[in-house]
Image 1 (tube, rainbow, N blue to C red):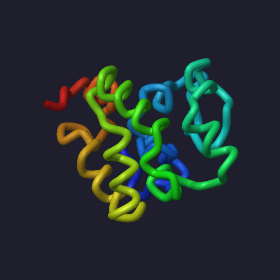
Image 2 (image 1 turned 180 degrees about the horizontal axis):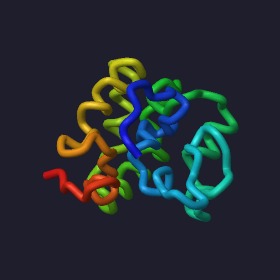
Image 3 (image 1 turned 180 degrees about the vertical axis):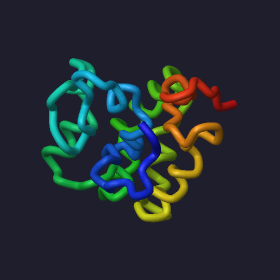
Image 4 (image 1 turned 90 degrees about the vertical axis):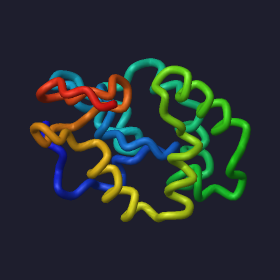
Length: 136
């Protein structure tokens, strides 16, 4: 899949992660449609996401826009994301709070588009889904 010219803002999880850069979103078979779109194709861990549960209760769109931000929940989620993927969900949520979703979309297109083929670099492996280019 190539990085689209326009990214739907619903493809940003409440924690601020861009779903387009997720390996599960990019899978050809049984792919996840995105955190805010549907539960179809999601792993059990994604279905049990406490951030998503909070979103469903409070109806805020992004953690960075919640009156309780930063809460214990996003801080714990952040620790796990840093440990597993070397990506800060706290910083992602904060970016949305201060920059706005439009600028985040532009920034993510630059940061996660493969310079070799225009494919999408996943945040989990830091690798292009098309050509295997590895991001430093």
